Image (cartoon, rainbow, N blue to C red; front, top):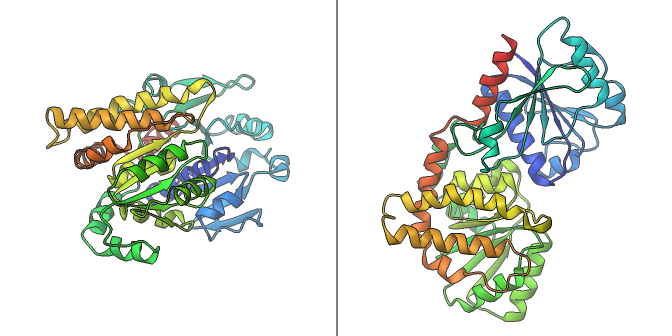
Length: 385
């Protein structure tokens, strides 16, 4: 059984903490590694995992040792004996200097595998750079770079063993209906959209377009400023066919069920976006806005793969799939421009059935590939042999 230290600095709020926790749980449960998650923001993690007490510097939850990354930890991080067999630096967080020196000292007597895990992307550099080694500038030991992605040449995406089967079982029961009712939704509503986005999204344009489209819509909206902005605009527009339901903050363990209970998902960030894909729901992805709109490059790379899945899905042959993919991409591009005045919501909704088929086809594509957990284990355990 290997020991593993995972380091995480929370920059992208729930996303960084959520991915760190999913990976720590998966490596613990599936590979039986002894995982220590060293994280600088246990408060954010506790929002997703209620059993975590943010006031504690050290605690064990679900078999994972959760350690607060602070000055006290860094001051005590210089023991070679305390260095794990496997060290994973998440999202370019950079290890403490004393811990790096301890790795160098430990390597004189035993193997240590050191890796840097990047953010999920469909951009081609994930294929080109995955598995590359880089020497430490001072100590010279090798760090392997791991790039999650959507193809076999990357490090894959994270999904837990049995997730596909649990999703299929959920859909065959009345669980979705019961969950929607518990959350305050109308379980018989013809169209429920989960809404979790950034406040920079053009909420006014979105509210205006769903108000102008006469088809009934139930929006299950996550807590946050973006929801308040949408609520205010819908109240001003007075659209009786659009029903807004405020969702509570749910633990990470219940998030998949929440997504599967909805008909489509408008979501932000890496973790939520990936889970919507794994749920097989039509996706509207809002990216974190970056200077000069460079986030649109990331969107274009993803659209190349996801758009192809929509076009190639069984039942989406010819103009049906092409039209649906075009409607999806048009909405995606406009909704990721903060100043957009028109989005193309009605065209997107016109294509909902082929978009559903495309989402299911994409889901099967993801599940057909080796998971991130397996690829990390295969790569790093080999370094210790």
